Image 1: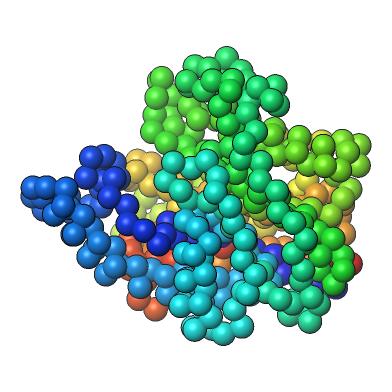
Image 2 (image 1 turned 135 degrees about the vertical axis):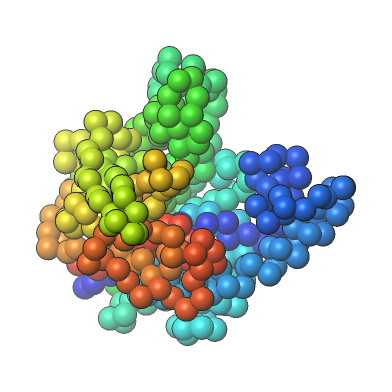
Length: 370
């Protein structure tokens, strides 16, 4: 009995306008930055017009990327709320490709912007097996102190023992597929942010993501028992904002691009995979072809990396030892640099930087869960 599982950071699927750019330049859209805006009221009017004009093309591409994943269940990141998800699924995904995702679940997490993790499920798999929701458990409330995870490194970043661990949530979703139980852990870890304290953004925020990863592992071990958890039927899906490896990009279009695979000594993902607890199945793909995200801060800082994960429990991974996940890159903007031989046909109307389905790529895998 097979199930097609996917994860995708859809980026800012909102049903409200974000006006924070009027006071915070980091959140200001670059189009509006060109104009001399005299008042907050004027800014709000222009922001509404800009967002509406841009959103239709963007969400068509997002829907095409989800459709291309062909998933029975898709875990999502950066969803505003259930109403935004319903409006998107019906107005774009269902009307464009049909056979929509009738089951949708999310809950409010800890993100200050209100972007949460969510899941959409079909009523049945492509093979006709019923998909049934059992329960959903939020772990957004868990603190460093409760789990004994507060460290001097976290304190140096200004994180107090009584603060919540997860920047969004670890949403535990129990389902059955054809009567077979499966548990999904939906996550979206702390973003890397800007350099601070003499460290780059990734290093500076690493203690937060490591704590989040340790908390996810503890939640799973407490649920199934530490000795037996790895053998149970579960998967961790989401954007972990971290990588174990990256592909550095040098050169240019005229003289040719050069690519170099670089391994990282430290990653929050290691916390979860240590001891064979679970497997990052994307690493079954060739090293040069594991990326789900293109990062650039100009010609001197460009790389491809994996930020989006489906981690299968040891038992589920062993049962699907030959399954290799797909990465859907057709919704990438044209500025993304593809290694030779990996180029794909972009979805119609994809732009140089935008519109785009997302800066992230959906990851999908077909699993035998019987």
